[in-house]
Length: 378
Image (cartoon, rainbow, N blue to C red; front, top):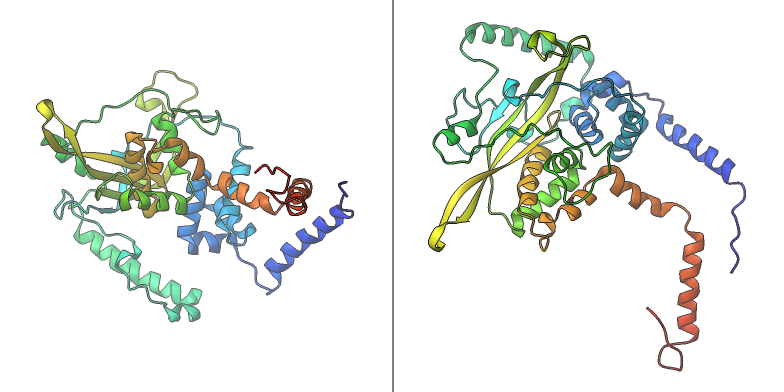
């Protein structure tokens, strides 16, 4: 059967693009990029994380262009990221230097420095606030004025009492010998954005793919881990949200001294250290329960994803390929936002030739049913 090309495709595509613009503007309202950046913090953080590009402004622009579609916004931002030159590498960031805004532990009630609830939906009633329908910039400014006045008085009372740089909870378990030491690996990390992923993957590759994985996919697979794919109930040892300082070495010096570095800015991140009970077989067949941990870190305040990442990090270390959530190829190939949504979306594109071939096969089986002198291959 011959293939007949569709005529007029260019004009149809141009009209489709105009229709996108119309749908975005038809109600006569234009979203300001600063407004998206200020009012859609959760979505901005999610898009930055999945794009591996830390820029709230560009993430907000991508969200505006994609009309709020996170997968499309990530696609746009990753495409832009691929055009950027890589001029510098930062110094290794030390998470202990984080200026903490939020810090909780589900494992211990009393932790050094205390629990800091910070900003979180966890303690809200999850009820629609209809007062937001009538919110104006004037009412917002008045609320902020009162809030900042209260914050200033609190800061004076707490001056010198609390340091925003706080010790790690897991360090106290290590001091008791209840959790294994984690030696620093100074090997240069692999970069999956510059070299194709191969298996077995290094831990740096796994962590990079997990942190830029699609939030829903990472969460779903972590949920599957807990429900019955190889892990007993984990517990959050510590969850932190805060600012990490980033430094680069001076291009004019190679000494590596602290004075030869430049501070280039802060990045907001969410970090999770997840405690996981594991059974270890000792000598003479004796089994012993120990604590291990998984790690998660991603851009912005992205707590569910960071927790899920830490669960999958530990699950992938076990490496039992008979269990999907421990199979690195299954997990790492299927959580990428652009790869997965791109392949699903490509099914909308023309498949005229291949479908006609399948259709001819179907017609042949109807004309020559199996068992009547005609062999049919499936």
